[in-house]
Structure formats: structure tokens, C-alpha cells
Image (cartoon, rainbow, N blue to C red; front, top):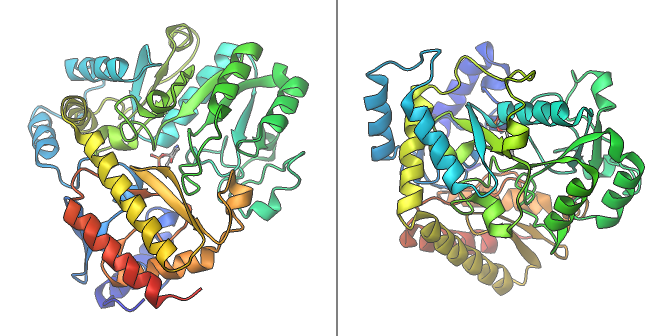
Length: 434
Ligand code: PMP
């Protein structure tokens, strides 16, 4: 990359001595000389240690919905921690946050708070297994549900390793997952009605849950085909399977009630994290009373840091702001403007490009027809995407370099930021040839 990176490079050399790859999450490592270190972030902007300023479209992979360092959220957290941060006891603020989540999310009648997306998909899966007395789970290729061992299959592997669409191979995304767990997961292509139907007809009695990201939030925002989520809903009801909607990325971002409000589909359980706390650690899972009530009645669930004052105070203000102000409408309007502008830039350059996803979190693919699933998306020109993103960084605009990660928008992105981004992208498209 042609940006100034001396300080980042020096920090990487120090960090790599004490942290694997010099980072605290593999996705943050971009290469020995290319891993940026952050100085600070405010509103829609992020500054690295070398003083480069970026319009940030990574937004910490989605949590930042209002803007970085939001003054009201920070003030609420600061005030809350004056009274202690953790008690191994429940505060009234936790009850208020639970009430707000139940009020905002159409399918949530009861909820438990936790800290990360990984934790809540793990807890939801246990509850589903306990409720049904079954062990297997269906997940879809290209969807990501966190770093625990149960679901880390066919997420970001090469789609060419997934085998035939008629008998997909669950491909573990890492070493270290016990062989025994391979037996418990069935991976299927997204938007494939026929294969889901056949799989269920054959194996329904073993299947505790189908876990679903409402769109491919970890694969460029590829959308559900018309009727697809409704089909999953209907089949889960028919076969007594728990439908878990993983709204970790979409919740409190696509709409106040998340993707279930946008698509009008009510799951049995739903998981939330990310935008719920505008960047502070908090997560939640919840759903039907009948299912959630197994918790504490033979089903274990908990955690030392659950309900910490830090996350709960952040969630309370964030939810109040999202509920009472036209924030998500504004974010979506700016997103639509950015999507339309990008389409114009691509068309103007004669590029075959599809934009997919929701205006608040979308991706694009180049060189293919509109993709229906990860297998089709994988044929897009990802090398070009990467070079285009490098050109964008060099010009002060920072989406993720990985074509799977959506562009995220927040309330702090102004009309002027969108205009600047579009002019940067026009320039980048001119500079990078396919
Ligand atoms: N589910 C989805 C849909 C996600 O996108 C992610 C994170 N990208 C997770 C779960 C895991 O969340 P966390 O990183 O907070 O553990």
C-alpha cells in the first residue's frame, strides 16, 4: 500500500513478539507490512498511528451504528461505572434493557444478556438442543456464527472445497475442532429450497435447530431469495425444529426490530450483539417464552461478565436513541445514496457489478451475475475487489479489504462523507484496471 505506515510497521514488529500475528483477532492481520494500528476513532472517522484519516466503513465489523465515541453513550457508561461495573447480581438497568429488547424485536418474548455474538449463538444452540432433545444443527455455507466449535464450518473456506450441492461437505474453518463435532453439523447452500427440503425429509428427527443469518452478512450481503426465509420458517414449524435467526450483524441496524421486522419472519430464537451497544461489549439472545423458559429448568446458562454495567449502560442509551430518533431511517437513506452512486460509478466504467444487501450493510461483486449463494459469489473477481479496496484506502476510504465483509454505515456518515467516498471510488475505479 502506498500510504504512510512506518509507525504501524514498527508496532507490528513489537506486537508480533508477544501476540500471534501481532493482533488479537486473526481478521485484523493484513500482512507483515500492511497491518494498520489504530490511534483513535470519532464519528465516521478513524485515524491510524501514522496519522492517516479514513472514512470508516468497517465500523468494527458492524457494532458502531451511531458513530465512534458517541458522547451520550460514553457519558452513560462513565456515569454507570461510578457505581461499580460488575456485581454477580442483577441491576434494574438490566431489566430495563431486557424490556426494551422485548419491545423492539417482534419475535422476542424473553431474553438473556451476554457479551459477544459467539457466546449467544452458543447459548441459543444449547437451548434449542435441550428444548428438542435432538443434537444436529443445519447451517448455511458462507454464514458465520462466531468462533466456538459447533458452527465454524463452511464459513470462509474456498467454496470449491464444499463438494456437490446435492451432498455438501461441512468444511471446518480451523484445525482444533473435534472430529466428533463434524457429525453434528449439516452445511447447506443458501437459497437452495430443494436441497433443504430433501435434507429435512431425510433427517428432520435428528435436527435441533436451523441457524440462519437473514442475509449473507459474512459473504457480501447476498440476500435471501423471495420466500426463502418464510420457507425455513414453515419447515421448522412442520418438523419441530428451532429456527434461530442470527441477528448479530443485522439486529438494531437493518431496522429497530432487525431483519425479522424487515423480512416479516418470526424465528423461535434470535441472537444479537454488535449494534446493541454501539461498540461496548453486550449481546443478547431471546425468543419464544416456551423455549426460553427451559433456562434454569434443567438448562444451564450464565457468565461472570453477563449484564456488566458497561455493556448494559451503553445498550440502554443506544436503544433509546434508535427507538426515539429517525437514526436507522437516516442510515438507510445514506446507504441507498452510496449504493446508487457506486452502481453509477461501476456502470460508467463498464464494470459488471452487482450490489447486494441492505443499505446499512451491503457488498458488491464484480464479473458475475447476481449471486444467490456463496458458491456463485466465489466466482466473482475478488482479486480485483482487493486491489480496488487498496486504492480506496490510499485515498482515505476504508471498507474491509475482504469482499465478504459488508460496507457498514452509521448515523455519523454525513452526506458529505458519502459524496467524498463516491469521488474516491470513481478515482479508484479509474486507477485500477481489471
Ligand atoms: N454471528 C454473526 C452473524 C456474526 O457476524 C458474528 C461476528 N462477525 C458473530 C456471530 C460472532 O460475534 P462476536 O465476534 O461478537 O463473537
